[in-house]
Amino acid sequence: MSKPSKKTVTKYSKSNMSSKEYQSFAKTQEPPRTVLKNCVMAFLIGGAICTLGQGVTELYMYFFKMTSEEASNPTVATLILVSVILTSLGVYDKFAQVAGAGSAVPVTGFANSMASAAIEHRSEGFVLGVGANMFKLAGSVIVFGTVAAFFVGIAYIVLGIGGH
Image (tube, rainbow, N blue to C red; front, side, top):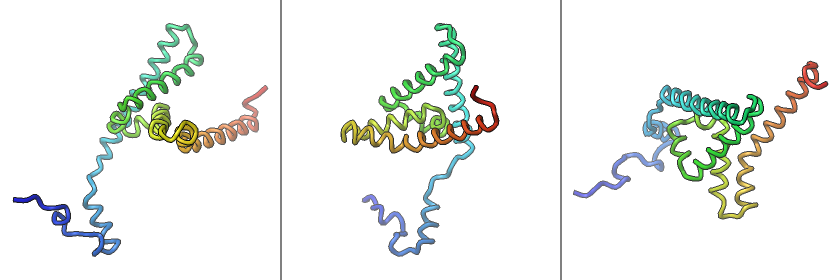
């Protein structure tokens, strides 16, 4: 007995359907979404990443006698470094499939997306490949951060909170 081809498995083909019929058919073929499970996993794993970051901060404070404020920058750098290493080893992407938004929201997710773009386009050269494609993604984040910082600074000046 021969195996049926994909064309004989389904009686539908896009060429003989209207747009609404095709949309309806496509919707029936989608796997069900597990929204609650995804939300719980994102919460737990995002929280675990933040807890790890707090642990790294505590280590910097204990071993290097830093204040909380002084330890914050090396903590972020450490989390970024770990994320980039895991991305380059191909581990972070598998982790992110389970974690969902929990791994995308912290700084580790941004580092992962930057490193992924660099790895993917390295064959095109450092400037036009790595640099250009990394900043396609990072550009919007940098612009938003700069504009937000500008408006927060203006608010501080207007409210008389900041400056001397």
